[in-house]
Amino acid sequence: MLTRIAAMLALGGPLVASAPAQTAIQVAGSPWTHPPSITRGTLQNGVYHLNSISTEITVPPGWDLMEDRQAGKAENLFFMDRDSAFKVAMYVARLTAAEKAGDVDAWLRAMMDAKVQEGLMQGAAVFELLPETVRAYLVQGRHALSAVTRSSRGGVEITYGYLAYICGVESYVFALGRAPTGQVSLYRDRVERLIAGTKVP
Image (tube, rainbow, N blue to C red):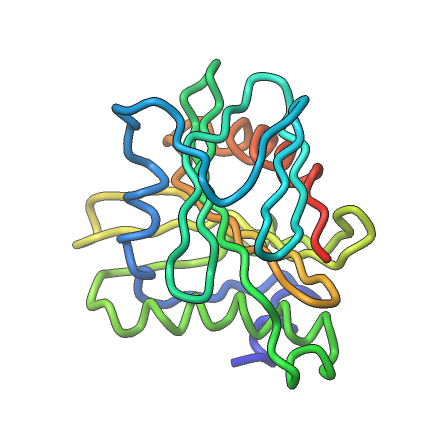
């Protein structure tokens, strides 16, 4: 599967599979009905510092950190854009020794591919990375890979989402969210403003 992602990046070919697990996307796309809950780090002067993994995120104007919480070995962060009500979840975790020793770009492609493979186990209809949106770039000097997703259930419901991985030396960040139909480009632009301020150790 790694070679399929590599080919798509090089040639623009589609990669299609069943939709990924919806739990995280539903969390990221659900409205918060409680005040912000920040217990795993500190937010000062618009900069969030995650204590356990020393990740820093400069929260751009208009965005709010609504919640941070631990989930197993990962830290989960949930953000909302006040103007558009767009929401995105970030998951921060440490790299294993084997991952640290491997090729960063290959790891990013493998992780994106793994999300597609994860969808094969869910029994939904189609889930695809839109080839024209797959982008490899740098975030605060760290390698990143992102893409817009499109999925459908029963050939009727079509939803769009966004996935991004940022790989550091010691840890990585995975971001995902659901983009409203008709606002996919705007959603990606707004979310990538948030991702641009992420410093991964």
